[in-house]
Length: 362
Image 1 (cartoon, rainbow, N blue to C red):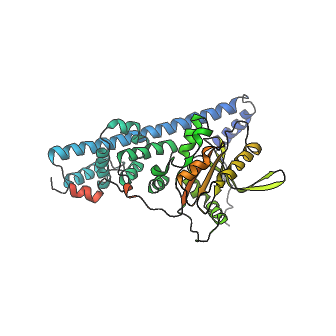
Image 2: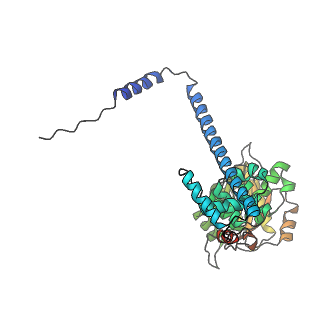
């Protein structure tokens, strides 16, 4: 007869530990919970700082390796064979370390060539992961634009996928370019931040709309792709609702899209138009903002901001329409397709071009 399976019992030490925890829980001081949470926060912060420090040291190491290769290439004519042997020997010497492939060592060389000043590496490029740096090196031509994306990555904590999206959509060319009246309707610190929050144009390349589509089709498409829409809007936008209902003196009004911006500390109303901007759109938005301020705005909130998104807009007409308006409004275009500007084509050589440059046998 087969033995009956025995129920597994926790070890005696485990039982006594659990009993001790249960027994002591009732005897804990009242401030133990907050104290524990504070310690958890401090430990997590320390872990993040340690990870950032380790990343910075690794990026600096890669820069130094690249710099040394550049120096020997110029002074002694090092070629592709030497770099290939160097990659092999480093992998043998440090089998537990990744990153010493021939291609990555060539990236180190390109990285040092792109950032000859170690101070920039310490203060900027070293603050983001190595392969974020590789993406920026590969995709961006201009040194100032390259540094702009490095700093924005630090500021917003972009993942590599989001960084690629922002570069390919030429965010640096659209950032802060909307027509607004923020300098006249908002106090200085908030007006600058609000202006930099808006883009022109917005790119909705994730949508496919027919030629005869209406505003509601555009709105539904954006809501259905809300995650991609939020990435395009930028960091800080929290979705509140679509066709958000407001009642004013017994009449019903509906906001196309309503958001709350966490950094600006204000509601943001977005009005969608499938045609060119018209001056009367500013008057309608002014009404919406007044109603939201009266009905939704909390005492600690800043004034509500409006964004009118149009298929096209003429800058001077938009500027005139906003000139004497007292509520903060921005006007931007949107596009349903994107074309990557030629300016984003990297001036850095590709891996094949680097190998060709190092092609002599040295």
